Image: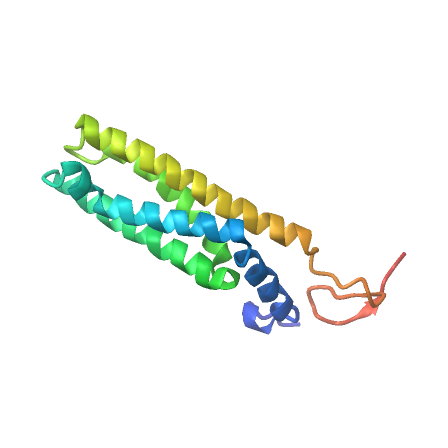
Length: 164
């Protein structure tokens, strides 16, 4: 028996997408995504706002990671059903932003460190909130089995009587 690895052929794909779209419609989730997008834009522009644009390595780092966080937040808010698998990336970028001043050459100025630690902690917290809200919505709507009909639908997609 050959199994397809394409999620598009999964028998419950519409239910799964509806579940994650409902999660992204949650006002708390929208707020977290919006704040994460603003935090990412700030991170991208922070070398010019705080005034450390002469430190080339950290300037490029903050620009790239900030734009990445903003794009992730935009994708979470517009299509969480298709991007929920990437929700772990934003907290990881938050951690990287915190440690980057010590790992990127020439970025040991006090204002650079303070800026990155604060905005990295914010991105980390908002990214964890996005992950948590997505998991809560998934857990609240069930585990993928239909029990209302008396039949359960296993991963293979065929129906069989429920065992009590």
